[in-house]
Length: 102
Image (cartoon, rainbow, N blue to C red):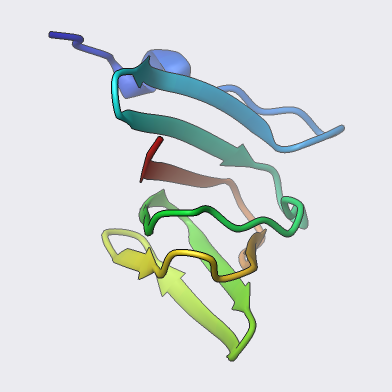
């Protein structure tokens, strides 16, 4: 069993999106993504579905079919193999929990 305090894992940098791996074992990966205003991550895809939960702020999820705005408290599932990236859609901080199988 692994217990993590998300508040302790929050890290922000004006230089780049901060990624803190919270769970890295077995068949599951859970990463905390912390964005400053205006930041975005690189395009990527996973061989399995990926769940994103917006903990703070608003994310613009860009994908092959267009884009979706997702706010605090929302959960979005990106299908396996779908190319996508996340952008901070607001003027403040963005914190997203990303979960996918390994």
